[in-house]
Length: 105
Image (cartoon, rainbow, N blue to C red; front, top):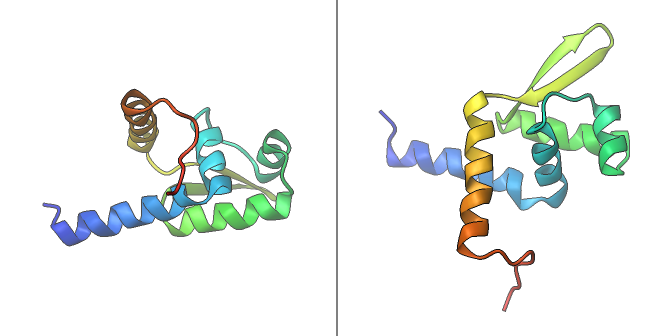
């Protein structure tokens, strides 16, 4: 059974990941399937070092898993349910307000 504290901790980890635009872009890219740091860097127009650092953070949050394949590391979302949750979360937010930008007042 999940306690309130457990839920808060889990949501805080997700919030930390989504709060950074680069980590958010990486998570969205991984919705399409597993990727390698160099591949993700090219796709997102970022440096490999930057992507690797953000992947380490996402891994520390428990949101992505790494699989070592020789000298390469393949990253993917840690759980299939996370794919569904992120997709649903985006759909809900767009349904509530489809504006692309969030403006601080």
